[in-house]
Length: 132
Image (tube, rainbow, N blue to C red):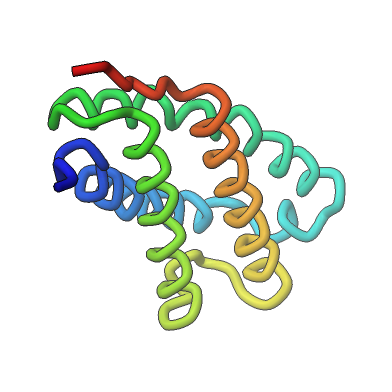
């Protein structure tokens, strides 16, 4: 039987959902002109690459608090954020504070960010596997 505390689903999913909500509020503060301008949009995309690494310490803290492994918590964090943004973009897009092309670009920035969180999890997050 699988030890439910080892897979990190609960803490990761909660961390991802809360993080996605906070990022949605952050996107409200970004002027639409920054999103549609190719140069500032490129800077926003570039900022997502190291941001994926920033989730590793958060996942590590959540994992240690519940006796879980870091990598699964980080992957579940991404799943929670994807689920949150997928539902909210479809049912409550006004939460992001953007409209039209700017909202579409917010969605693409989120997808790009999720890719880098997965890359961070697979390449840089500790697996925390111990032989017992």
